Image (cartoon, rainbow, N blue to C red; front, side, top):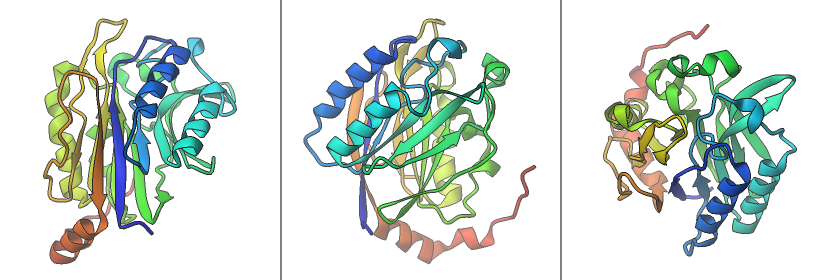
Length: 259
């Protein structure tokens, strides 16, 4: 079990529907790491941008991007996570994959497809929340629009870290900032949010605002807004355990049933 977790957040522009070029650009950023890391976090749909044309970019779990992720994880001896378009059994999924250094893969399919953009018309929603066990930490991976639904993120598993990956537009970034902080506070967990920057082919602007919050809602990163950036943030188990022991708010939470 590791008492610390070094998480690398990659806030980047994405080339529209061009997986090969996006992988190449991300490889350059990852290869430039000097400090050792435990987890590398990429944005939502990191191979394509937030496309509603899944047939143009969809891959399988045996495809080129999964092979690339496994190679990066092995070379860096770090887990790597982000979401991409996956085709499986004639369905398209906005799937967040968590690739371990040994090549093992956990995955989460986005439950709350973004109806405002028509994501629900072309992507099949997930039905299962997962908790990833990694280096003695429990990690809950979620995707973009999931952030607006606190019951789905409710910490009934005693997880340690929430990770949200996103293509969250600049016009609504105030909500992103507030909700990331709220999820950290209400779940007494670290909350990590990685969002893209730049403009996509639908003319939507993205302003980043990637961030890391501790269990009390304090922001503990220095990631700049509105431009590409890579930052490594250290999470500390003792901070988590001290505050949970002192306040123990999770013991008083209400119970919900999700249908």
